[in-house]
Image (tube, rainbow, N blue to C red; front, side, top):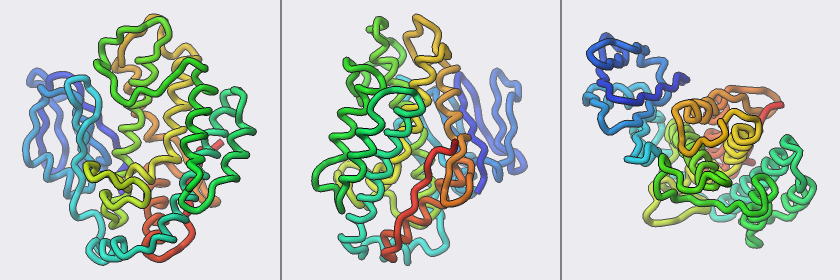
Length: 312
């Protein structure tokens, strides 16, 4: 699959020319990308003009289109319906998948997430990695003891400070009211990064022939991406680590009160990090393809689930 990520901000027009995505601003061409190289197209502005041919071309080549709301936060994803040659067969197997297999897969996902959180604390020299490693060993099939929630409650305070709390909805991501502790900015960065990773996982899930709505743990009737939200849990710490480093290593200037284009570029760059999968290291998008294939085998054929981890 292709691996180019294109983010379009400001007023622009997009069209297809000889199987190339052409981006123009003020009537001048500012970018040209072969459609066969495109993995994801991120549209940040409502003023962007896009043709139906571009949307159809993205679907044809398996590229994901991400659209943003008035706060420039991702709020919609367009995925190809032709992601896998055996989609209908896989869908039937996914629907018929056994509950024990789903619970075992969720156990593996939660354990991997908690271990990844421990790894982030160790990499950032924050205390608590040992505690999280111990919690990971307590995860049972289906996680009936909610180790995931207990680990998260401890982890975010250990990483971002005892006063930190997760805000999944920010009133205005580009107009931060509290610049004294950067609470809203940190949460906005987390939410933006999670949304990018979520779109990447959705793309891989569909390409593997799985239906993104049929989750193994998440079952919200109003959520069209339950399986995506299941699968991305072990990948959230990748975003946490990037946000921590942006906040602590001086890459976010003091006094910054909103998600600047530079910050967004740093978060979108998460799509290029290397992940360890099995005995080999792959770029994130390639690792997600293999992860989604393993997830399909775990759900449909009761195979053990393999999950990528951050490379050293």
